[in-house]
Image (cartoon, rainbow, N blue to C red; front, side, top):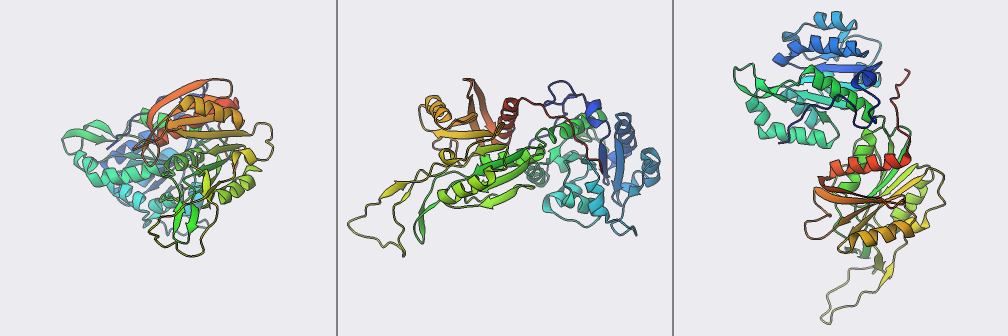
Amino acid sequence: MKKGKPAPSKSKRSGGASTAIDALQGARILLGVTGSIAAYKCPELVRRFQDRGATVTVVMTAAAAQFVTPLTLQTLSRRPVYASLFEPRDEILHLTLTEQADLFLVAPATANFIAKAACGLADDLLSTLWLSARCPVMLAPAMDAAMWDHPTTGAHLGQLRAAGVEVVGPQSGPLASGLVGMGRLADPDSLLAAAAEQLTSHTAMAGERVVITAGPTREPLDPVRFLSNRSSGKMGYALARAAVRRGARVTLISGPTALPPPFGVELVAVETAEQMAAAVQKAFRDATLLIMAAAVGDYRPASVAAAKIKRQAAGMRLELESVPDILAQLQPRRPRQLVVGFAAETDDLLARARRKLDSKRLDLIAANLVGPSKGFDVDEIALTLLDRSGGTTELGLLPKPAAAGRLLDAVMALRGAPKGLHRRSD
């Protein structure tokens, strides 16, 4: 199970110009507190956020109030502390509290809350807020080492990470049980640094309208058969999830996959290459960035049988025709409209990718080798990025979510205009 680790004190995407203090200045933090002994550290955490210029609103579970009183946190935060979903108020708390937040941090997060968050349970105010949140979300687990090491906890955290949740900690050290092990709440410095990084990264692509294609295409042969390829869509979906987390508006045009739609994207489901081409043409009109991560088929049957083709002892011949080249048919591009392609090859990778980059007038191409257990339908990928100025960057073998982040970093570097923090004025 992958353990969280403290984030650096400076934003990785700020170009070194913004520190944690800058990122947190004026930020509105929604702090969820659950029933862990580590809740006694929350008053100090509230003060530390305030020292950085943030405003903190606290939501507690009933169990959390057994460890730290609502009055303590209300006095320190100088704001109401919320605990019940059914408190008589004019506002709908499970909607308005997250709408007014720039970041939602649950610290400490117990194994019970993590399970509820992963399974989508909403039986109190805090879990209902979590399920309705549209702002960046973070978890800081705290529990005994045995609970942390349990495979169910690991599975739940894996689900949450895949959904875009940032997990910070825990750390190793003395536990309430008297044992020493993994399970201590991350220290305040780590939590503040991670919060600053999350706030900065969530606005890195603010204002971008991103169109991403993903998965395979299918070309029907008869009512029950089709021609397709081995693409799983994992890379395109990882790119869509990463772009949303950075504040972009994302349209994901996807061929058939077994993947759930990433949270926060507009999903356009297609099947054939012709359908994907039409969807791309439509979405590209308003896009600032197009990433063609789909494995679009090159050929389709010249004719489609109206009924299931029956077995023939003499065999059969299949006539194929070329499908439309989506990138070649794109309407004229506007200034600063970027187009990124993928080149999946079995050999002569860089030369073929460079030719595709030039012939299709791409701004950047991500090249990777494909074959048995390589590239398609796996969880890791080794990308080489080629840009139109002749530059080449090898990313090495990375999990696809990490590779997606590195690719978006390269795209925004081409854009050449670093994004700052943007606070909502409501």
